[in-house]
Image (tube, rainbow, N blue to C red; front, side):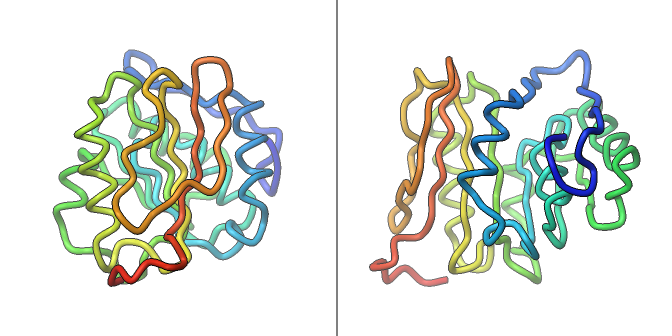
Length: 190
């Protein structure tokens, strides 16, 4: 953890999975780029949760709620352990399922304001495009939502759906981090 109410605590990473923890310097730059206005009070989705570090960092910095989704049992165990360690479990829920399956269900009662997507680096572009398209459908994201996408720098920019644009991006070694938001001129339905 970098900052906030759980700052300084070590999180455990799931062993035996394809989880690749986000480096602290990348997390620090990402959360500086997000700023408190996008985090405090936010309803957060961590779509490929891994250890849960990104959603837990957001909770530690004042996000209201977080839903962490991962299909790997060892990752889900690590997320639950980390939520207990940080004492943030009361503001989070965890689902063990693939993100595609999760997005085929009904949208949440309260749309997400902040979405973290850190899929495996070998995830095919069309699969990520499908996830992003599903998140752009009405009911999933608030009008002023921010998507945070982390992927291999060699893969290039993420395949954003119509009506979304990149608002910030950086490359750290082999990692590309992108913030995306709805195009203010877009007429896409919410």
